[in-house]
Picture 1 (cartoon, helix red, strand yellow):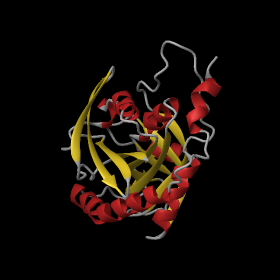
Picture 2 (cartoon, one colour):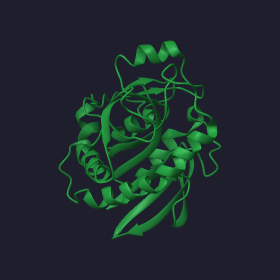
Picture 3 (cartoon, helix red, strand yellow):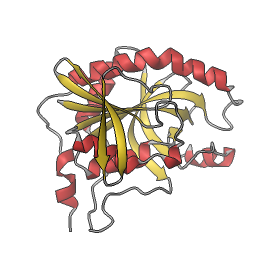
Picture 4 (cartoon, one colour):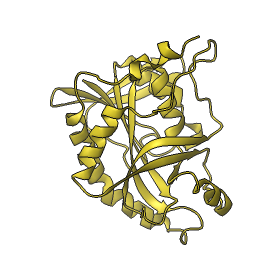
Amino acid sequence: MRIGLIGGTGIYEFEGDGIFVSTRYGNVELTRSVHDKNEIFFLPRHGRGHDMPPHKINYRANIQALKDAGVERIIAVSTVGSMKEGISAGSMFVPDDFIDFTKRPSTFFDDEVVHVDMSQPFCPEVREAILKAARKRGKVFEGTYVSTEGPRFETKAEIAMMGKFADVVGMTLVPEVVLARERGMCYASLCIVSNMAAGLQQSLPADEIAAIYEKMKKVVMDVVIDAIKLIPEEKGCKCSEAVERGRL
């Protein structure tokens, strides 16, 4: 299998050979490696030095580059803020749905009419593999992710409103998950809770948030490698059919 691994905050490097993929949306550098006969194509969405803010990431180029590299399944790693008291910093979270408050280009279909079905936005097979691997290492929360534009953090009023409908808030899930579906790719996400959202606690100093990243880095990579082994080679999902089903 060819697996795409999108690294978020704190995960910028992956051992392997660098390759460059040129797309109509821009050029993308990937790192290719082989684990147990599976090819893994690693992409740090913020850049290797975390120099790309969330609203400036070239999401279309990233997803197109993975598609052009032959990737069929994607595991995306990111950090989020919790909007629920029971989901504390350092927890693992696997979203099962999302709400989009971003303002970014979020489709490949600007020149034709295609309405992809997002009623089940995450690939059930990849998501289940992540859940099984994560549960071996502790409690895993599930729920709804709100994607905001960034780069600023949310206000207390925004969190109070969004917390009525969702569980965590982040800045990068959308449009990745939508674009992956539009390219017929299986996508699921593993999130690490780095802090409580605005109004739920005093702001954490940057060094404390960084310490959470560092503490969870090995756990995250262990979960990812295990999850890849648990993904079935034969697809039983309908992710690859989304475009044809949505074409008018």
